[in-house]
Structure formats: C-alpha cells, structure tokens
Image (cartoon, rainbow, N blue to C red; front, side, top):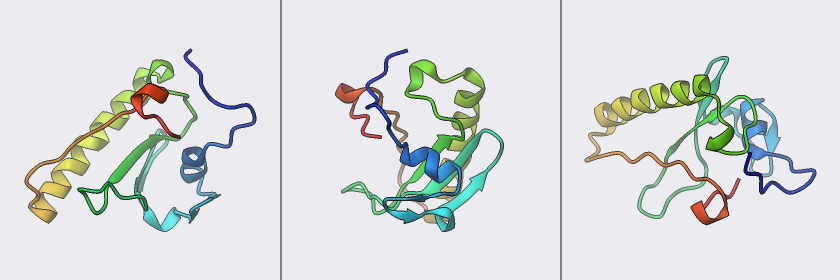
Length: 110
C-alpha cells in the first residue's frame, strides 16, 4: 500500500525468517521461536538503553503495518506478550517496551 522499498531490495528480515545469511551473518542461532507465521529472535543490534532486545517478524514479507494481514498481526502480538512475560520472570526487568516502525518518518529502516 505505502511502499518506500527500493527496487531489487533484499529484505534482511526475510533472510532471518528463512534461515538465510544476512549482512550480519547467519542469525539462526539467535532464533528462539519459529512457527508457520512468525520468527522470534534476539537482535544483534542493541538499543543504547537496553543491551539486547527481541524482534518478532512475520515469515512472509510485508512492507509495513498497512499491508500486514490480521492473522500475522495477532501472531506477533501474542508472541510479544509471551516474550514480555518470559523477560519479566527471567530478568526481573522493571518494564518492557514494544515498538513498531513504519515509513521513513516513523523510523522504519528495514
């Protein structure tokens, strides 16, 4: 729908979902969950205030949230809740944040 994707773009998130090697190497060892709809992995890129974070992606390429079918959106939300609970229990973190970036002005960089 709203596409800012360059021509002949190779999506690194699709590469992760497919178990392929990305410019950051093969991230398959970082995958903590995968099913028919989503892949969940620990990102090698850290936020300044958080030394590690989990990324949940659909296994099919969608340019942004505007094109994301509800089936995938529900799977992503359900997984994000489970991950949040695991992080809270395991690391006793004070809180969690969820983010979703769309379009260049929304800081979408993949």
